[in-house]
Length: 530
Image 1: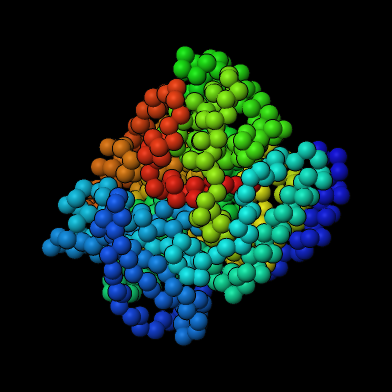
Image 2 (image 1 turned 90 degrees about the vertical axis):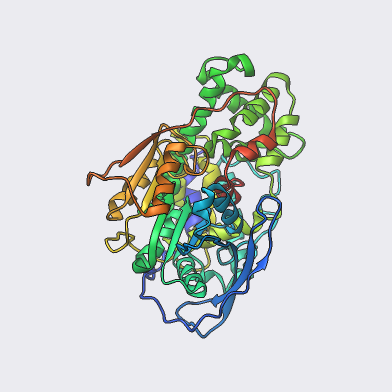
C-alpha cells in the first residue's frame, strides 16, 4: 500500500499548499455593549419537563461588538431554593454537540436540594443545534456505504484525501462568514456573554470531554469570573488537536481489545471462543466480509467501525455489540448488526450539523499538517499498532488539512488565578486518555484530580459511581475539594464500576439507557467518522 507514497505525498502537498502564519487566539477580551435581558419560555420534554428556553444575540466577531450578530440557543432549569449559588453552565463535549438537554440531565441527576440552588444553564454553541446560523456543509457526507477507511493502495488514499478536501471546500462555500469566527476561544467569549445576560458576576461550570477544554479556556480568559468548575474526562491541553487524535487512535484500539477480551471471557454466552486473540481475528474477519458484501446494503467496513466505536466510549454498549457480533460471525445473521448500526451510528438529522461544528472548531483552533505526506506517514505508523479506528479517525479529521481559513494558536491554559477546579478521569478512558488529566492537573494550580482506577468509560460523574459523585456533590455544595499533596498524581482514587452483565440478545434501547448524555454528546460529533 505504500509503494506509491511519493506520488501520493506530492499530490497532497499540491492540494494543501503551505502552512501560513498562525494568528494568536488569546488577545485581550474586547469590550461588549450592554446585553439585553433574556426572555425564558417553557420548552420542557417528557424526560426533562422543567426546561425553559431562551435566545441570546451575540457578536459574530467579539472584537467587533457593534457588528453583525448571531443567535445562541439556551436552556435552563431554574433554581427554586432560597439560597441561590448562581448559574451552572454545562457542556456535553463534542465539539459540535448541542448542550441544551444536558441542563435537564444535570439538574435531574444531582441531589434535588443541591440542584435547587443553581440555575442550570445549557447552550448550543455557536453554529450548532438550534443556534443560528447552523453549520451544514455536505449533508450526505456520511451516507452509507462509505469507502473502507483503510486504503488498499495510493489511489484509494488519494481519493480519501480528495473527499476530505471537497468537504472543506463545501464548508467554505456555505459558511465563509462564520468559519473565521468559530473555535473554542469564540465559544468561551460566548459563555461570558451568557454570564453577562444572566446578570451574574461569576459562573459555575460543569463540562465533559471537549467541554473540559472549553472550561479551561474560559477560565484562562476570565479567571475572576469563575466560582466553581468541574472538568470530567479531561482533554490534554497540549495536544489540541492533531496529537490528541493520534493518542486517541492507540487508546481506542486498546479499549476495543478490552471489549473483545470481555467477549472471550463470556464465551458461554457469545460462543466466539475463549481466546481474546481468536475473538479479535473473528472481528476483523467480519469487517473484511462486510467490506466485500455490506449488510443490508448499508453496513460496510466503515459503518461497522462506526457501530463498534461507541463501545470504546462506554461499556454499557458491550452486550448489544457482542450479541450482534456473535449473530453475524456464528450464524451469518446480519439483522442484529444492522439494528445496532441504526441505533448507534446511522446518520440522522443532527449528523451533518454536528460534524460541521466539529470540524469548524477543531480545524480553526490549532494548526494541522497541511501536507498530506505528514498524515500519510503518521496514520500508517499508528495503524500498524492500532488498526481498529486509526484511518477512520484520520478521515474524520482530514478536512483540517484543507480547511479554507487559517488556524489559530491555542491559548496556554496554565492558570494560577482561578479558584480550585475539580477534575475527574478514568484511567482507561479512550476518548480523553489519562495523560491529559495529569497534564491539566499540573497546569491548573490548586486543581484536584479524582481518578476512577481501572475505569474505561468516558464520563465519570452522574452515572452511578457513588465515590466520585460524593466528591462532586460536596464540591458543588460547599466548594470543598479533596486534600491534595502537591503532587502531579490523583488526589482521590475511586474504584471503577463493575463490567456489564452479558446478554445473548441485542437490545439497542437498553444500550441507549446505559450511556449518559455526555457520551451521546461526544458520539453526536464523533461516532460517524470516516
